[in-house]
Image (cartoon, rainbow, N blue to C red):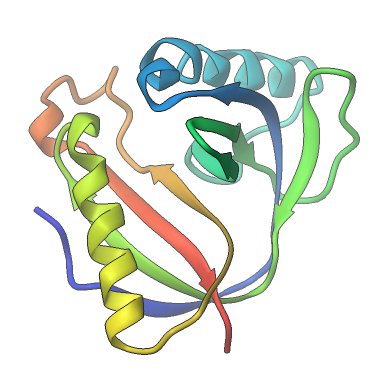
Length: 154
């Protein structure tokens, strides 16, 4: 299931993340294990996530992608050599919610891209996936919910 895309105004959202360079086929093996690493880093600093984990697709060059894997935090924090701070800027975002297994997320990305093009909305900056459902707590992939978001020019 994919919801109708919409535009949302969002506040700035600081985060901490580990960045990795991957191909599409490497995503399942390389990126998900970074989530507990970032979470452990937050716990060591006595910090808590201020929202769900995400993948932020920073750059795509050919088949290679630079992806930040992280968690929002309530305020900007200092990182280290491995875990880096960042921020989703305040502004308007095109958003679509997808429910189902992660292997079909591409359909939601395609829908959001087509919708912004149809409505003459100019995307700016990288897109991201926010994983709203914890697969450990909900083992049925048909119930997993993910928001795909991309900042747009207002």
